[in-house]
Amino acid sequence: MHCIVHRHYIYLLHKIETMNAENVKSQMRKGTLEYCILLLLRKEPAYTSDIIQKLQEAKLIVVEGTLYPLLTRLKNSELLSYQWIESTQGPPRKYYSLTENGELFLGELEASWQELNNTINHLKNN
Image (cartoon, rainbow, N blue to C red; front, top):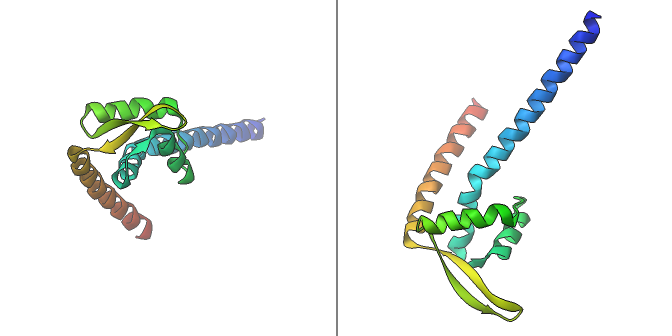
């Protein structure tokens, strides 16, 4: 009986650790999504579908339902602006680009990312 209880306890601990690991990984992806979007838009203005495609190419899976509110929040924070551009495939499209404030904010994020990356590498290697 003790052995069965012990195995069940180990199984539950493993399941909890797995669930927590998935939660942490999800939080890490969410935490870097804003940074990744700003990096993409630094290069050139982009339409929402283009942003999603580029993120997917980088193995960061994002759906429109997640992206639209984030783009709106970044725009309301004056980090992004948008422009309507006529499309040959339907109605005009909203293309997002970085504002001057967005460039400054991205610079701050890059410095923070570098600092965090240095910290993690230090901990991994020592």
